[in-house]
Length: 375
Length: 117
Image 1 (cartoon, helix red, strand yellow):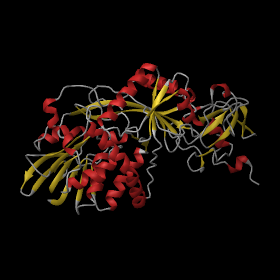
Image 2: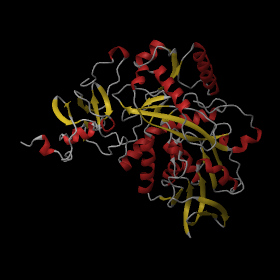
Image 3: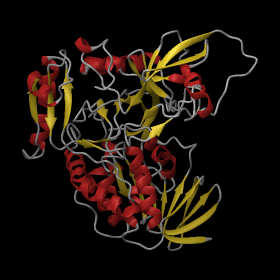
């Protein structure tokens, strides 16, 4: 049986960011990747590196998110140096468009509350129509204004996934695809992970398996209440540069395509698309930037977010089985830098990142439902 | 100098007796069988460069011929980024190579050709 220092279960953005970070701390890292039949939120996401609006109700999440956004240039440079893959990180700030005065007021109130919870250090401004149009000339007349924060940006998420895989492998991480982790057993000096093709032993194990974390976590004595939440996304043809900034629901990618999202739907494990939802997403896109009415769509898809009960990440080491960790979130792009550069050193045996205790699943013992997962 | 038909990798079947229509590609007239796709018509006319990619400017020609790969984009009668494998030829059709990404225009400017913008 092959023995390694750490087994990472999950080969998506969360798993490979952690594996890449681990490769800087320990010798032998093995990633078990279920393969292309997996649900793969990593291939369906929107590509934002987004801070504004996140953390209402749990301000450490705002801090963690912002930490990651600040670390992102380091991650992007490191990945490029090692792999020659430019993940096209751009952090010019981002806009959240509002269509009424009431929306503007609610947005301002929500960001103001966040700013207060963070002791005032939270840069954003509310801009009126003319001020937004100066930055986004394609803006439509129905847009009343927007919040803008210099903290926000975007990347090419497909290039990111490829860069993380490539960089990990160049650093001697072994990635086994088509290998589904089925059972985790506590063993002397660590864990034995039984998979669809053989067993592996490791001193430490990290669950980064997205929606599969729910059942896997029970085997290491943790409660990880995550479930699927569907987002539908449209992508249009490549057009000449139209948007110099990302917005919450519309962005132009590095190669010129226009990506338009998204929806929040509770439909179980169905990752399909529906015409009515796609139509309403397209209509909001056209209200935002009327020129998009001419845009030819190239593809549409649905993907399943990995949402915990309160929408915030869960990072925790098992109390029952020290050395077993869980890492789960729905912002694998934004948080990739924090996962690689802050979370991985902790999993490798270093000091816990500041504030990580706030992300323990212990919080669900007293959980009262609200909706906090919006941007 | 090679003629168009000599340069082409493709030819129409000899038994073909369908009527022909005349189309223009980048200003040059071509007589092609009626009822075939624009992509097939351009290929049989010896056109090898349909477009330049938006990202690198490299030359491209049709690949899948069934509406999936988006390699065969051209401008047809002023409309940019048309999949030429999915459009049929018509008499007098004006086709231009798709040079890089198209430009979305403000409503007031629409209707005029976007080519060269």
